[in-house]
Length: 197
Ligand SMILES: Cc1cc2nc3c(=O)[nH]c(=O)nc-3n(C[C@H](O)[C@H](O)[C@H](O)COP(=O)(O)OP(=O)(O)OC[C@H]3O[C@@H](n4cnc5c(N)ncnc54)[C@H](O)[C@@H]3O)c2cc1C
Image: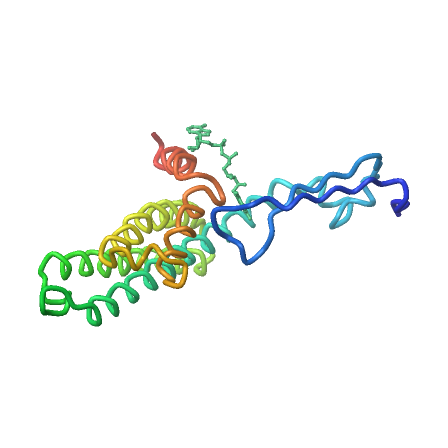
């Protein structure tokens, strides 16, 4: 056990662009000595840290891809509902072909993202090495999400800028997918290796 009075614990919550459903805090412990027996998860974790990290990384890639798909579908639904309700120049926005095209593009890309994710999930569930399919899904979904949320903001005009409009939150949450569990650039590096490049 670590004597409580021996430790000087500092927790500093950081302000964030998004992801505010939970706090992110650097935690600093000064004056603490921990033996391997005191490591969270026990001494075995010290030896098996890398394989454990690798496995959780793979599962987290699926997690982040699913988050990207959810955000893309939600942004598409919000934009679709908005263009039915909003009228300009005497007609609903659905009457403007450029607006229709934007929503068609969003819907198509969101569907493509979901199909890619399902492909990766099936490969993982089959028990074979699904690393390449999962890395590709994470890269594809993270990158495509950015254009979907941006299109939603364009389609919804000034309304998307306000906090009460869920799309403003989707727009702020989307960049997380670009770096969580390794940045897009790192994902591409891993995929290049798997392709033997
Ligand atoms: C609030 C928050 C929560 C997070 N939660 C998690 C989590 O739960 N799980 C998780 O896995 N990650 C999580 N992350 C992501 C993780 O902490 C890092 O942000 C992520 O791994 C990227 O590392 P970095 O921020 O140090 O970027 P850096 O490594 O500093 O990268 C900066 C830029 O340089 C590029 N770069 C770096 N190295 C290379 C290279 N070798 N070749 C080409 N380009 C390169 C990157 O692609 C990027 O564009 C979280 C991040 C935040 C902010």
